[in-house]
Amino acid sequence: MPDFLYKQKYNMIFSLLENHSNLFRNSIPLIASENVTSPAVREAMISDFANRYAEGWPGERVYAGCKYIDSVELECMELAKKLYDAEFADVRAISGVVANLVIYSAFTQPGDIMMCMPISAGGHISHGKKEHSGTAGLVHGLNIEPFPFDKDNMNIDVDKTVNKIKKTENNKMPKLAMFGGSLFLFPHPVKEMSDILKEYDIHINYDAAHVAGLIAGKQFQDPLKEGADTMTMSTHKTLFGPQGGLILSHNKYAENIKKATFPGMTSNHHIHHMAAKAITFIETLEFGQSYAKDVISNAKTLAETLNELGFYVLGEKNGFTKSHQIVIDVSKYLDGGKAEAELEKSNIIVNRQLIPGDIKAGRNYFNPGGIRLGVSEITRLGMQKSEMKQIAEFVKNIIIDKKEPAEMLNKIKSFRKDFQTIQYCFDNKTKAYEYVRIK
Ligand SMILES: *Cc1c(COP(=O)(O)O)cnc(C)c1O
Image (cartoon, rainbow, N blue to C red; front, side):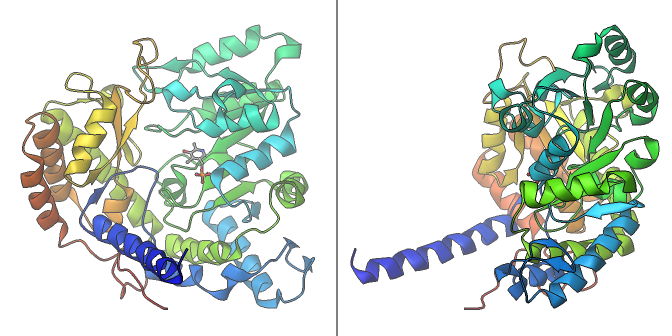
């Protein structure tokens, strides 16, 4: 290839990156698993930590040059423990999936059984069985037994689960119970079930990937206090940090987790993200409670308004949501995949969602019955009650009224203009989606 073409491609990649920032600057980002980071977190992520290795534990590294990295990592662990009131924190898992794999490896053997949320009711693919290429089955050879699910309450059915465990033969008893999921409207019954699970020697992990920021802000359940042995999470969903993972537990599990994390599941633990996690934990200690409160109240307003406008919002029996998420069954109008595409034409970014009953109705992941909306990112941009009502109106205009996408796009771009800085942080000189040039 002639050299000038390389330069063209080089320029092209950078212009795509800028286009992306521009898209998000003009969009209403409602992906429940996403958030936006503060300028401080972004600065940590482009530091030289990004180029280094620091294998092992602070003070026991297998490379030199780790003096400052060790100090940051020790601080990062202290902050994580403080934030979650936990005895032990391992901040090295590079993602939520890796954190779950650490738990699988530390507390189960291939062939063991894990009880968890079925994917069709909001379980995450990292809890999935081998036939679905789920991480638990495919990578660690776990067999999967679903929690019975109660559609009206949009939660685990405690009575049916307890009966199911009592009727299970000893050699088929789960070794691990995994709470948490990706469709996560209401706190899971950890407190209600931890005694019986412990009676049968079942290790309890709580996957807080989605709700980590709400737990940190003390507006959701506290899994470790309710009886969970260990807790895993992503650091970038409601917790507004860099993409990464985190594991918390009581001290008695520390050694197992440390070994499974390194050398088991990581070599390089992305230490620029580790530093950015430390910054996030400080931001969350300072601003986390007001952020989590605002997120949950925004989600509730959005859900109630959508319901008033005629949408079938799931979880009505319990007030639609107690988290950052809302799930709408749109199947009366179109399927979830088409709804996602229609909304995207006007820069409203959501994801289609399998909802309970879809599989029976012959729907699948590509054309499910629902869409999932999350308010974590728009709350971090400072949006409040009146904006939630406006957004619900936009969604109705697109899906129910079928208004012209071009007209909607203009409205949404102008609505979006006033929300360009990050809130709930110490410094916000750089705009939320500002493309930073350093080259
Ligand atoms: C998002 C998610 C994960 C995976 O986290 P990554 O950080 O993307 O690896 C794990 N569990 C649940 C329940 C999730 O929603």
